[in-house]
Amino acid sequence: MSDEGSESSGHSVTVADVQQLVKKKDVIEAQIKAYYDILEGQNRAGMDEPLVDVEGYPRTDINIYEVRTARHNIICLQNDHKALMKQIEEALHQLHARDKEKHRLDEAEVHQEATEQENSVPTAFAKVDTVSPDSPASTSGLQVGDEIIELGSVNTRNFQNLQNIATVVQRSEGKPLNITIIRNGQNVHMSLTPQRWSGRGLLGCNIVPLQN
Image 1 (cartoon, helix red, strand yellow):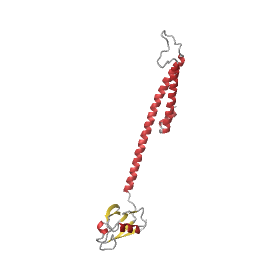
Image 2 (cartoon, one colour):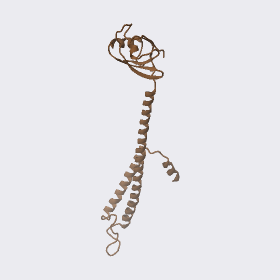
Image 3 (tube, rainbow, N blue to C red):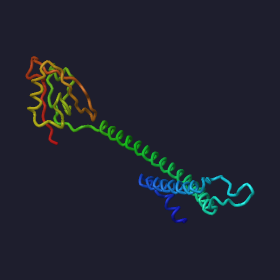
Image 4 (tube, rainbow, N blue to C red):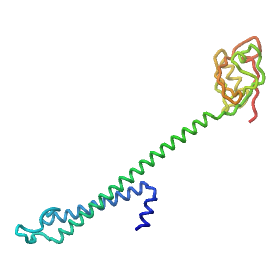
């Protein structure tokens, strides 16, 4: 008995365990009903009806032994039922607490992953190697050495060659483009508007692809 108790105390409750307890409860309830049916059949003797007549003699209209046995068994089964209900309640509480803790840990993991992604610096796909004075690139704040991770719709994931950048720049003439660069290990966001100016091109800077 002690081995079984120690094993159950260290056992992590599962849904299957709860289902087994509920099955036991159903069996006990069926047994209790069966004994109540016996009492009902014994002239409705019930749990409290006297077993002797008004003169103190054993009643002859019922099977006294059968009534006593049924009453005794009902009391024992009701105690078992009460203990089992307590077990079920505790098991459900443990399951709920574990689910709540699992949900909390899942949320913490998702938050951690989001934080790591936010803090991680994406890989750049191109680099600025020249910036002409008074050009749109210069006016926007772009500097030599800036590494580009996003320029309009072009980013690290979809960049294939410099033609991608040229296409976006030509289509966006006179419209601001969002650009994200890495400068001194930090992400920097700025706006760059491709437009005609006194120099060559719409940006006035030279961009070279980076070899990953």
